Amino acid sequence: MSYNPDYDPTGLEGGVDTNTLPWIAVRQVEGLSFKPLRASKETGLFSVLLRIEKGTTLPEAVGLGGLDLLVLSGKLVYTQDSKTSILRPGSWGFMPANKPIAPLVAEEATELLCTCYGPVSFMDGESPIYLLTNQEILSGAKEHNVGTIPSTLSECISTEENRSDVARFEGTGTPLAIANRDASALVVASSDQLADNSEINHSCFIDTRSVPWVSPPGLEDLSLKMLRVSEETGVASMIVRHNGIAAPHTHIGGGDFLLLHGRIGYRAGPPEGYGPGVWIYEPAGARHDATQRVTDEDLIYTANIYGPVAFDSGRGTDITNLISWVEYKALADHAGYQLVPSS
Image (cartoon, rainbow, N blue to C red; front, side, top):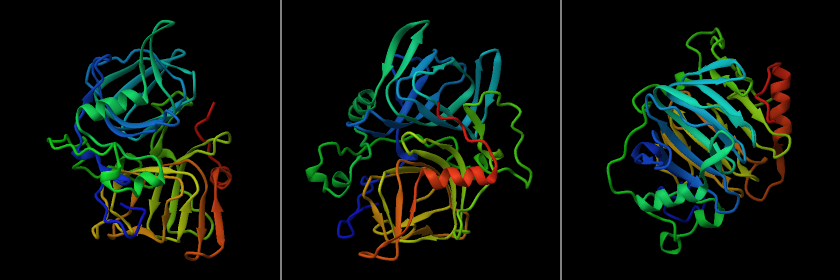
């Protein structure tokens, strides 16, 4: 996509088809590999897809800035405080900063979407054994000639000749395990009944299928499954079912999205839109005159929203609506369900 209507997009400006990327091994942590998506050089935040090989037990860890994750495929077992949670596809979780993360056991090869808000320290008891940082993600991407998504509006509208971080992976990527499936099944229960949540026994995790859809007032074509809202940072995590046309809007804070089902159309994007497996980052200041699905299928995607979104009726017009963490939390409160805690 492009945020400059006069610039011919190359596919690197804000989105990447993750199925075309390779898995890059984390050499210091056996059985763990990643696909790089975005790594902020300012805040240390990085977004990645992770793969944990079958039979791997990841060491205990601590997210120094917190992290969230969505299980896309496979099966993880998490045991802490004498309780066990089985994390199957569709399980979502948030670990606040400095919370010990018990070892994760991969009973099946497992793929995750993960946003780390700072470095992750792998531990041996009380001693750190390896620190996974945004620099590791950037270095691995550079070594394999994989471009990462830029973090600022100015980088997004720059030509490739003016960008030092542009790289084009020319090898054969490895599609996600969900590439040839209906990935909406990750987050949507197969019947009108909400999913059985009995396998999850820690408050830091939730089965997204068990979360009901809620629609903001006046936006019946937009449904949300609210997962977490931070009253400290304003970050909101959710699943979105977007079947209408979004009014003209500007992202006051950034946002990232993984498409699970359907195809989404953006101005200056391809006519066929972007489909499942595409991960998108919209930097602070990005503006869209319209965003909509381009097929008759449900358009479903994950979303981390890092600040308010301002709606208007066209370029140069006054703001008609501003949606922030306050409105997102009110939606969850009105629906009467518990969000994953932020601390």
